[in-house]
Figure: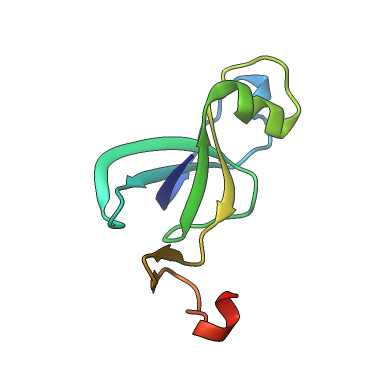
Length: 105
């Protein structure tokens, strides 16, 4: 799994049938500090993410195809979650509201 930030959408008028009707997102992969690492991926959106959001990606073809119920096809990366915060030794950061210490459990 990887964490990335959605940079925008990808429009493709001619594509493989496995991608028909699915939103494609251009995602900047983030390093451990939350900065772009210089790489990007095009991912099928399964959760309704949009530009600027931090997302969780599965970047492995077999798992990605299982997520959409396909047995074969040119699919490698899918967005499976929108990240609210990242906990790194007690420091919280992210796009969403920061939970207080009592809410962390």
